[in-house]
Image (cartoon, rainbow, N blue to C red; front, side, top):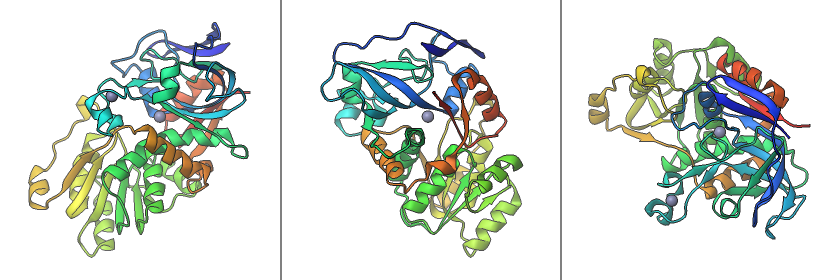
Length: 347
Ligand SMILES: [Zn+2]
Ligand SMILES: [Zn+2]
């Protein structure tokens, strides 16, 4: 089969490798589509400390079962597959916090389990039992479902931080994550969401795709603060979500939120990008700062349902499609901010 094999930082080769075998109790799928994620780019660029080489990335998978040794997963079924496989045994798993599992395994993150940037992928029985394998019904374009994986992380964040029916939310960053936060907050009843994006092309792209209230402003721009204050009679936003990997944006978020407001840090930042937070403001304004990461299989199922029901319009997000041979081009386009969501689509 054809696969995009990562041999090291920025050393990606599309080559012919052995097709995996269907394991006892498991399945073998033919990949239909696999989303390109910011974390794939980080691994490709050499920014993942856990990466093993050579490896096959890709964790936002849509595929069709070609061979099955598991009666619950018959041949011909189309599946939406997300990477997290909680162990089911640790303290967190037993307490319903599977996204913080102590022994979490991941599909397609270059940590040992091959992913979807290949024509075929096999999955073992315990992955099927503990992971995120959901049926794509007939009548739904499987390519659309790849957005469900990123949407799961976003939905987890909004559930954990109880974002429901707020007046004004500010999202910093108009990438896949920022745009998803905006749409999902709207689905959960938020009156107005502002997206601040410093890259003019990215802001333009998001507007063209139909996202509302996208302003070409950096998080530090006084114009953004003025706008937020004007819309809230000088209070500040109910919630500010940092959907960009920049420490300064995290620091700026504190100054945009109202008293008793919430700030969500979504996405890791590099060491050199770290900024100093105004902890006095957190104290006096009674601001709550949250982190949010990954999702449980249950939240993945709920996010997929948003796509399957059409509440979340995948077409607004999927801006770029690539054949497997052009995955490197996909990463380059992502670095340049030329996409909201890129997807590798197989023949
Ligand atoms: Zn992803
Ligand atoms: Zn666990």
